[in-house]
Image 1: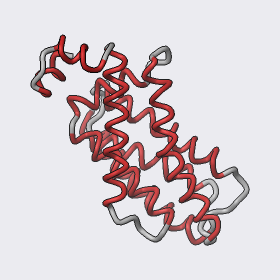
Image 2: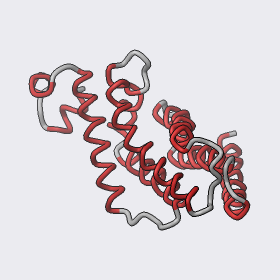
Image 3: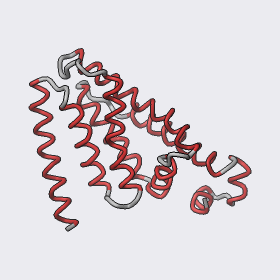
Length: 191
């Protein structure tokens, strides 16, 4: 709270008086972060290819989060605590991000890039969940931003690969191989 107060130019007491409890403040930060992310996603010209759009959305999210890590790290840690009131409220904001992925998956099914044998909404939710672990590892300081991006993209592409048509499968396989090389190189640097 001290860092937040210092960054805002307010005292800790003033911050609490203006916004409320610690959880209220963190919820407000999550809400504002998601709004800023929405704006950034609107500014980015989304690719016409819906599979590529899923990647761009993840890249924008990662860039946004690592840009202000002093706020993002604690915010993510609190938001992902099971008993946190922030978690309950954060989920409603994250549903907007899942909805964008859902629409992209449905469009990719319509244009023949992905097959339709899995429910697009459940897949979008699972793609989001598959990226949670790398985000938490980053929030805990266990991996850096480059590793976060590689691991999150790997999870995204593996999920999409499961229902990819032949032409999309080849492209995703190449992307997965490239990311795998990045992951192996990152692992070597750490060891």
